[in-house]
Image (tube, rainbow, N blue to C red):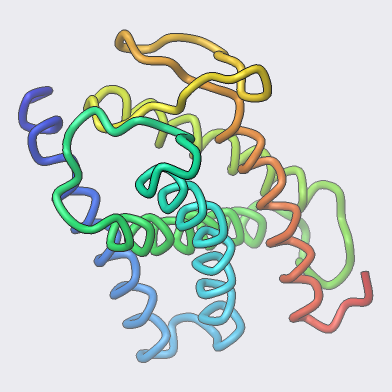
Length: 186
């Protein structure tokens, strides 16, 4: 099973990225999600693209290596950045949905620390899962630097602080944008 997951990691990754985007599109077309939720998916996509494209572009062009791919990329790096941004949009929507499900109504109508807290906890947990899966599949690992220290080693691969910092900042930005889209003065 591990060999299958490692061998086909990026195909599985691309499949789920496409499915996330198609499911959100379908839910929007059949009116199961509101237009604002559709917009939030693309807000999440754009936020994800900020780091996905920047880090992969810098790594792949030799400007600065943020991480190392442990297997050859199956396609051009821009496809990876787009696919992972599709994932990011979906991951932000799951956090949004958790807030809607867990928090007292109405949600996202004013700043509430518990709403932001759920977004932050979700961001950290899902990022931990994503990074653990990538190292489990021997797909990629971040390179440690003084500003990106090693947190722990899993499956013989280094897990660093940078991805966790990204997913500490990104949910704050997403939450702020969500409030703004709902007409809240922040």
